[in-house]
Length: 416
Image 1 (spheres, rainbow, N blue to C red):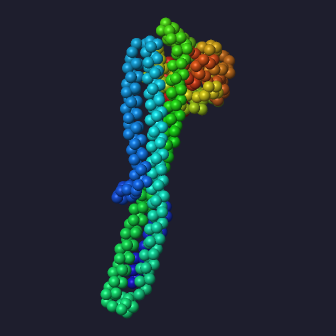
Image 2: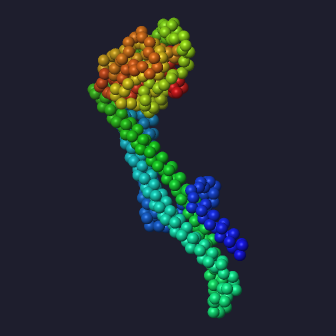
Image 3: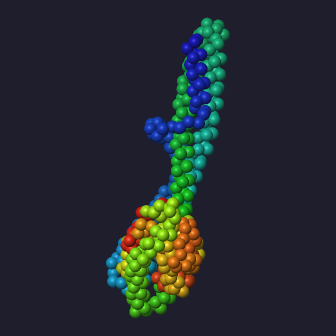
């Protein structure tokens, strides 16, 4: 009798534990047999799984096509520098961007379907958990009721030995069913924990895919704008295209030489203008704009004009006219307003560090002045056909260079 009461007490305690939220380790979850397939044979789940598989097939096919165009892009990069080849490169980049967008959209749709599947399972598991709890309560009541009677009482209350043994068998079956219900409840609880964790991961993946889609859509816009700008600027003339490349190369060489000269000229001014309580900076304090979306990296192998010169900066995507803030205190050494040509600002900082801001649409600082960290020095540009953008531009962004003793270095190594 005592053992029976102890059993019931432990059972109720176990039921309370199972009813409360708890964390299942990955090892324990994996040890539960096919918790994710509890409802795999349900028609609703099968329909969702079929839609998910269809999307996977479409995604795989699009990725194969994307790889083919990526190969074509590499082939164009290795061809001779000509207007025809540059346009071919842009055409393939545009097609690849379109395929990337379609793939991304399908991945978003697939993830949404997977979340729907998880929601269905979670709701079903929660309902069945409640049913199993109710069953356990009934079983416990039956055992408790029978526990108050001795075997002699059960024998007296029954008319025959057959009914007596039937009653005993019934009680044994109740206890067996009770164990099955407890096991099922634990299985469902484990499955529910796994499903909820999977859902959170899928929701996180969905948000990332949505952000990636916006990035890819912007990339497509940039490629389309670059092609249109190239056609307008060159007027489909190979000679004009080659002249543009020569001008771009000369301009970059001039900036290289200019920064080296300015670095040495203003070194003493920097030391004088810095307050006594300010120590020299070896890195930049902040980014020049709020955006952290990089469309071209330092010495980027995918830079569209790499055959003209190695990309000495990072390009940070941002809206046209975004305020540019000084990422560290420094001396405004040069400001060049080239009208609709390439406009830029050069600031000299501590310890041989200087920064260059290209494609600016407006300049708010004057040469031979000192700026503090966070001061607005100008506005971003680079939209084709606007002030300061220059002729070879691929869309709104900030061209941001960091130089050490006049030599271009990777800006990401100096930014926080």
